[in-house]
Image 1 (cartoon, rainbow, N blue to C red):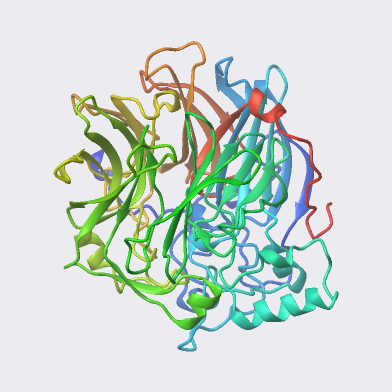
Image 2 (cartoon, rainbow, N blue to C red; image 1 turned 120 degrees about the vertical axis):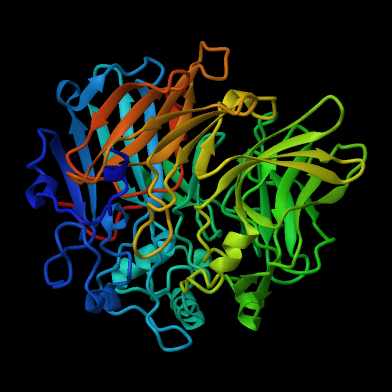
Length: 587
C-alpha cells in the first residue's frame, strides 16, 4: 500500500464526463455568470490536463494553467445542494447556521490574448499565487438546502481586464504606463465611475489571500499586499475597497491583518521602499487610526507576510532578504526583486503594541537562518518570557530556490513558502535571546481554537504533506494529503488522511460555543478527489480527528489559501450595502 501511495500522481486518467457540470450529481443550478467563455480559445480543454502539458502549450499558457486543481475555473455559480443527496453524516448544530468560505487565486484572463513581456522580453505568466481572488462559500441553514456560491472579488484591475479582454499585468504588477493611462482617462471622464481610480496602483491588487471579520465587515487581503476589499456574506459579493486612514494611504499593507482579541480593533503593518520602511497601526471601528508608530530602527526595506499578537506584544520576523529597489518602487510601490542572503541573520521583532504601555520598546531576537511565512500563536508566561509558534522555511531551503523561480513576485515570494515546519520559540526579553525548538515537519496553514488566542495552549492543527516527494511538476508547492492534530506538550500527532489521490485545503477551526476545552470544536476543510475531479467539504471532530460529515459537490473547487467560518451573528451583523456587479452579463 505504501508503494502505491508513492507512485506518480499525474500518470493516470479519469473519465472526462464525470467532471462535466450536470452529469455528476442531482444538484440544482440556480444561476451561472459566464466570466470567460472557452469557445474560440483553441488551447482551452474542458478539464485540467493530467499528464503535464506539451511544451508548446506551456509556452503559450504558462506552466500551471491546466495542472490538476490549480487550474482556474471561469464561471460564477449559485447552486442549491439537497441535503438528502449531498450530505453524508451529521452536521453539528452550531455549524448548521453560518457560512464556510475559502478564498484563493483564480486568474480570469489566463486564456485571453498574449501576456505582457518582462524586461528580458519573455512572457509574464501568472504564477498560481498571483491569480485574481475568487471566494467560494457554503451557506448552511438548518433543514434548508446548502447554498454554494463562488464569485470573483471585483477589484478595479480585474474589472478593467474584463472590459479590455486582456491581461494588463504580470500578476503582481501592472505597467507604470497602464497606471498613468487609466488614471488620465478617469481624470478626463472617459472611464465609468464604478471603477475606483484611486485603487489603481503599479502593484496589482488581487484580493485573493485572507478574509478578516472586522466589526460589521468582511475584508479581503491580497497575497502580494495592497488594498483591502469589503465583501458581503452570504452573497460573496464585493462592496468596495475599504478606505485606509491617511496615515497609511501612501503605504502597502502586508498580506495578513489581525483583530485585537481584547478590544476588537484592526492591527496592521504597512510598508514602503523609502524611510520609514515599516509602520504599525491600530485602526478603530470608525476606520480611523487610534495609534501609529514608525519602526525607525529599520535601515532598509523589509519583507513581511504575517505577524502575531500576544497580550502585550506584536511579533514578526526580519529575514535577510536583499532587495533591488528601483526608482519605480520608491515612487509607485510594487514588489522589487530580492534574494535571500544565507550569511545574514534572521531576527524576531518584538514590539510593545499598545499605545498606553508604560515603556515602549522594539527588540530584535536572533534566531536560526529562516523566514516565517505564517505565525500560529503567541502568549506570555508568568516569568515574563514570550512563547511563539510559527511555520518556518529554513534558510537552506530558501537559498536552494533563490534562482529557481522566475515569476511576477520576482523572488521575494518566489521561493516556495509552502514547505514549512512548525517551530516554537521561548523568548527571554531581558537578555534578548530565544530558545528554539523544531516540533513537526511538513506542516502549513495551521489553525488553533480561536477562543485560546493569546492564552497558553496545547494543540495545533495543520495541513500536512508528510511525503515531501509529492510536489507539483511545475513547482515545489506540495499537495496536502491530510490534517495533523499536534500536541505541543507530548509531541504526539494524530493524523486524518484524506485518502488515495485526495488533497486537503481550506482548513479552519470552528469552536463549539458550549465547549470549554481546546479540542471542543469542528475542523472544516475542502478535499479534492483527483480521480473524479470533484471537491467536498469535510467536517472533522477536532478531538478524535474522525470525520463527522461531508458535503459533496458535482464539480471541483480550485485550491485556495485561507478559509474561515462566518457564524449567524456575524452574517446578520453586516450593514446591508449594494455590491458591485460583474462587468459581464448573467445567464
